[in-house]
Image 1: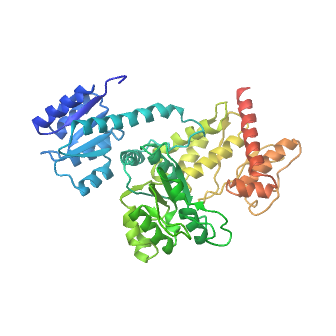
Image 2: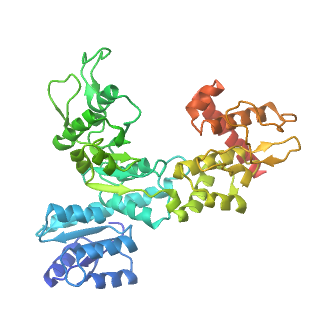
Image 3: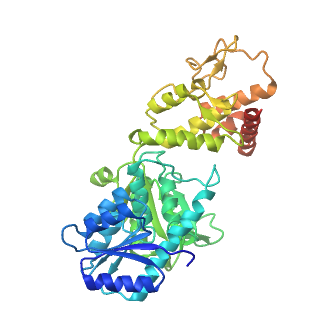
Length: 473
C-alpha cells in the first residue's frame, strides 16, 4: 500500500477487538480499537479514520444507533457492520441506513481483509476521480444539503449490492444523476449503464426494447434484437419513470426481477441476465399501488432500497452553490459572476422545475449576459410555472424584464427595435427567444428555426465562446 489507512474497530468483546486488530495490522493498516459506540464517537472527534468496523449488538449504544449517528455526522465515512446474529433483515436494515457492507460472525481473516481492501480501494478511486469532474464533461449531483448528502451516503453504501434501488422525487431533482452515482460507486462501474425512459415509448415497442425480440417475431422484425436488459448484463439498467409502465409489462418485469432472466418477444426459451435494476419515479408509487395502477408485488420488489431526493425549494443551502456551479459550467474560458440583485432574485424563486429549471435559467443567462456579469434582467422568471422571458431591448436601449403580450406570438413586443443591431445579434436573439418559447427543448427549437439540432448546438457554443472573449477584454 502507498500509505497507511487508519481503521476504527468497535466491539464490546475484548477477544474480538484483539483478533481484528492483529489481522488488520498484519495487513498494513493502522487500527484503533474501542469497546463502545460512545468511545467510537469520541475517537472520531480526535482523529480521522478511513473506515469504521463495528459490532451490531453492544450495550449502551448498539451498532444500529452508532451507524445512524455516523451517517449524520460523517456521511462519507464507510462503515461495515458485524454480528453473530446475522439475518437478511439485519443486513437490509444496515444497508438502508448506510452501511457499506455486512459481515456475519464467524468470518475468516481472509474475508475481512478482502472486504476492507475492496472498500478502501473504491473510496480511493472515487477520491482520485473527483477532481476530473468539471464543467459539462461529467454530470454529477452538486449539493451542500445535509439531506441530499445523507441520500448520497446511503447510495454509496448499497452500490456494491445487487438489490434493486427505487429513486423517487419531483422532476428535475437529479434522479438519473443519482442512479449513475450508484452505478459509478460500485463494482459494476466498468460495465454498461443502460437507461430506458418508460414514458417515451408505446407498450408494444417498449416490450421489445426491454426484452428484445427474435427474427420474425412481428412485422418488421428482420433480425434478432437484444433487449436493454441483455445489453446491461454485468452492469446496471435504469428504468426511468417506471410509474408509466403498463400493467402487463409490470408483470413481465416482476418475473425478470425474480428469476434474473428475460423472454425475448417471439423467443422459445428464457435468456439469463445479470443487470442491477434502478427505477425512478417522479410521483409517489404508494398511491398508485392503492389505486391498482401499479402492482403491489412489483412495488415491494423495487422498494428494497428506497431513496428520495428532496425538491430544490427544501434545499435552500444548495441554490448559491448551484448558481456558482452553473456559472463555471456555462462561462466558457472566462469568469462569469452573478450580481447581488440577481442572486437574491434566484434565491426567492420557488423553482417548480427544481435543479433542471435553475440549470436552464443559468444557461440562458450566460448567453444573454453582455459581459462577465449576469444581471437581474438576464435571469428574470415571470411566473410560478418557470416560464421566463429574455430581456427586451427597447428603442432607447433600456432593458425591460417584463415581456407581457409576447406569449403566443412570433413578433418582438411593441417598443422593441432591431435598428442598429447586426444580423449576427438578431440571429442570436432569435435563437435565444425560440429556446425560451420551447422551454429549452433544443429539438423543438431547431425544428421551429428550420435548422438541425447540431447547427443549434454549434450556434450556442459559438455564443458562449464570443461571451468568453468579451469577458477577457
